[in-house]
Length: 404
Image 1 (tube, helix red, strand yellow):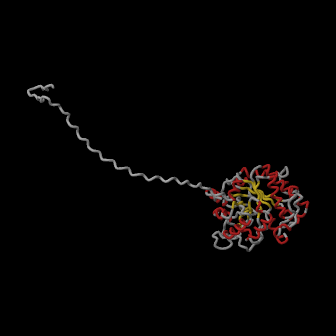
Image 2 (cartoon, helix red, strand yellow):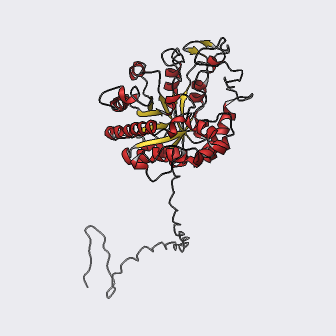
């Protein structure tokens, strides 16, 4: 072994035969044992969520869509107002209605050339203001209101059916959705004059129209022929039969209209009154309004009768009784509310515009699809003399329209 020496005075001498030793390693600090892992609770399998099935559209919503309109309570205008009048007030109605009147040489087909062109002209004018055209067929009154003698007159009915067919062939040319109101008041007179109120016992010339040769020669056949011509020649047209209460119970009217086949149409046409309420309150009576002691100005608070809630209860009976079809109100008067009865020509009081446009959900609740406001006679209120009532209420309504 080597002797290890160091510089300087002292020395360390290793003993002979000894072995240098490695200092002992610093002891390792024992590690804390890791506690066993707590087993995790298994996640339960995800329960599949049943798909949410959307509620089906109402019959009113479906009709609105067929018209190319949104699923909201529709607001229309009609007689007594031109499309120019409407545009001036920046109103864009959903529906624009006009009459087709008369049978014979001076009837509606003669209003423009070629014969029947009035339909296409009016339909185009309606489309240009964003409205669906509506035509109120009012031919049966040619011989006088309530005079049904023409039904068995082959000459009269041949002209009648020819004109009705012309309407639908002209609508086919238009090639867009359109509404047709089939003979206001007429069905009320039929119910009154048919023996026992049975429409199959009121004779009429129907099978003289070749397209309707398989139908019956009675009032049921008349309704059936109207539907046949509409479906055959104007598949985009939507048609409705108007109900006339004439003092009867709503259930009886619904039953009668079902007998004539009204439930096969697309909608029901409903009316309140066709003049401003105030017109009936004036004395002496204006020529177009026979004075009435009945209360025709309804209570908007619905606390006293007559009122809107009572009326809508009756509409519900009609709607449910005629196949649950959607309801379109037509020729709704446009007067302005007033606490003073009566009024003056073109400014008679009424409150239907105000109530309907501020309570639309009450009308959709009974199956309503929309309402057409218009003047039922020359001196009734329109947007031209209502002080801006309709324009203002309409603007407020379209901000939050009632869903169908």
